[in-house]
Length: 228
Image 1: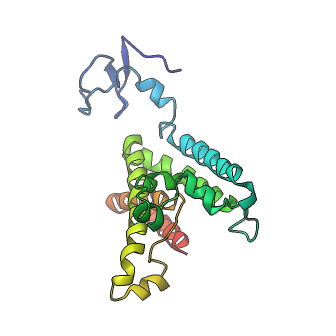
Image 2: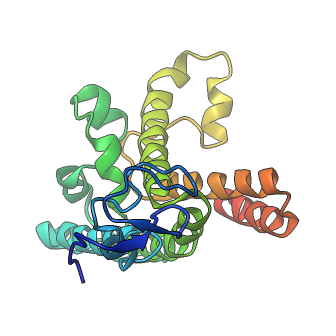
Image 3: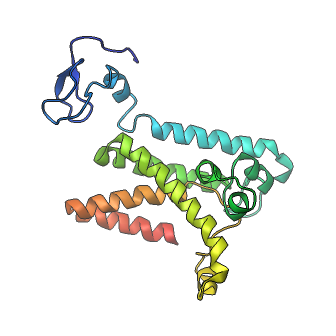
């Protein structure tokens, strides 16, 4: 399945037209290295998202199980949202982000790792379901590479904002209002929600740019639901 083509013709990784394996540029769309060194077919076999959705789901589930296993005595069972919730200590070990890890302990890398962690069975189930729905659509409209960039940048931006907000909101004139609205940041935070909102934003922008009213209405519905 992952055999490299060294001769003959393959499909351009961008426009899908036939190109030579050794062509430097696609004559149809102008894409550089259209055969992707002969691995274009193998990459397409992973799906339109290049296997990224499977990677996120498998990685997130693995880390969720690991965070439960590392501190079983701290697992919470009360309430729907906190059912099978890993302990705070376990989440911190695996890279939870927020004001405390980022600014007090200097764990800057957690703005990336926290997006792979989840605080309960319903939390991870909901996020993985939405990613499975949104990510392939973003990959289809923007390309798999851009989808992965959007997902990652949204994750980093979201956790950075949350960490910074907790640092500065007490000094703002209307800091109390941010706290009431739930926009004052977090001391410790996890989840793929920032990335999910990034995918949603990409789809919303695409709907506005192309004039797709059906897609725009659907994204508005999801945006309201997510905010609630």
